[in-house]
Image (cartoon, rainbow, N blue to C red; front, side, top):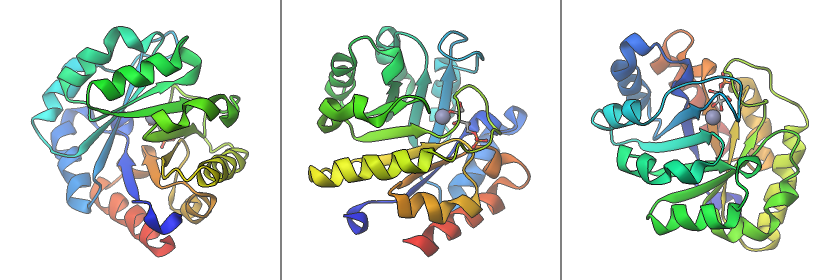
Length: 224
Ligand code: DX5
Ligand code: ZN
């Protein structure tokens, strides 16, 4: 099953230098990253507030990378059309933030976008059992969402393995994204557990973004 998956590095612009956002995006694209992870926070679902549609619309003009929009917001249904119009390719909503997750995932797919479902560290992957066929991707949060630069929560690895087992048993090739505390030294463990889309914020944007992204991609290639 693993060899049929495509592997992606998804640099998270949450840790970028916003005075240089365009050139930071060009740098990670030049390094070979093809996903760009965009964290949207509302100050309710998570404690912090980040950025939204105007920023996405603006950077959409700068790159053809896949815009992987991670909505850490309550009632995301209210904004799905706006995020699509701003340029999202993939929208991930949190299971904990959606009263009717099935409906929300259907809505994302009906808009012609890829749909992702995210679970917080304390949420078991089993909440997604029935909606897995609707998901192009499942995002396992490996930190409590809201901030970059936090430490990886070790039990997340068990959740990745459990989820990949559930997917394999049902013949699903769904992507598994891991978000939080990802760095080069954790990549072999994450890939062997079954993850294939790796988000990295501080590990990419702290220092030389292009060099860091190249190193993370090299570490991924060594595991595939
Ligand atoms: C956290 C965000 C992450 C964050 C990851 O709530 O969802 O995408 O940017 O940052 P690092 O890679 O620094 O843990
Ligand atoms: Zn994220």
